[in-house]
Length: 356
Image (cartoon, rainbow, N blue to C red; front, side, top):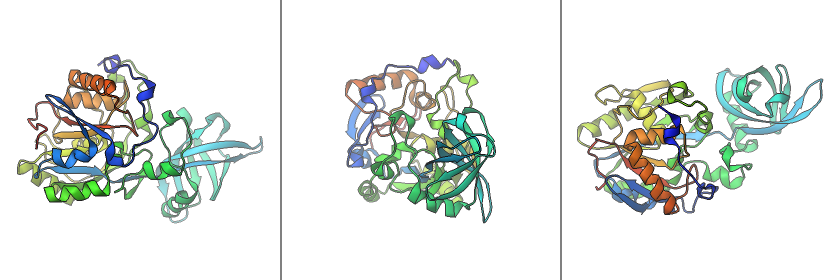
């Protein structure tokens, strides 16, 4: 499928550089047979008592580190962003990372970061990726990063993360460290909103998908068949799977809060839509023509042109419907991408209309 089919004009002024406050004051566009403008705080009124909302509880690691390369050829300032742990034991761990500028690093270089013991470059890969050896186990390293690391906010923001991003770029229910990027639809959730779901008897289930750097990487191919998604690790526990399946069997809707939750659900579902416990990696790439098995409703932010995320929402709700919804959103001044507004989508052909 041609990538240019998913292109559209997006004024730069509509790309949000900060979230609104409070979080649930963000706008929410309900996309179905009609387009209805709401606030995210209206979400409890748009759900049904039998619904189950699936939340991704991954926690973004503040894994961006500024430091110095110590080498015989001279010192140089570098920045690395830790991506994924590759190996580890009680005394050390090995991580893949992105380096900037990549040309300054070679195998064997020693990197010194503020508050972090020296790290060694074990390997240099394509695209600025390196493999680092750190003399800290995972738990100790994560503790150090909470003090000395910076949040890996999206590169399109064009700035360094600050103290506000430390709070803003993390969901209120984040608990499982491992993500390079936030599950951004969940950034709109507040503790107050969660408490207002309880009287509605809307169930909540937590799953985990550690969002990788691939979420920011553009598609460079002209055809979707030539693009490969980066694998990301996820988990659905037995209890979570049982709760989701029970609600589905009783006629409830599975409401995926974010594309990460949706991709994990689809990775764990059989052809009949039954969710099995899952622990492992998924690189599921969803484009129009994909047959959804699990999710009935998707809550997600507004995405960038030609992105894998916009392709996913087109597969879920129909390309023409989504292009029309995005035109409405642009005209109404909705804010796009990670810190932007959200939309609530019904799966094409699911019969899961919006009204409670």
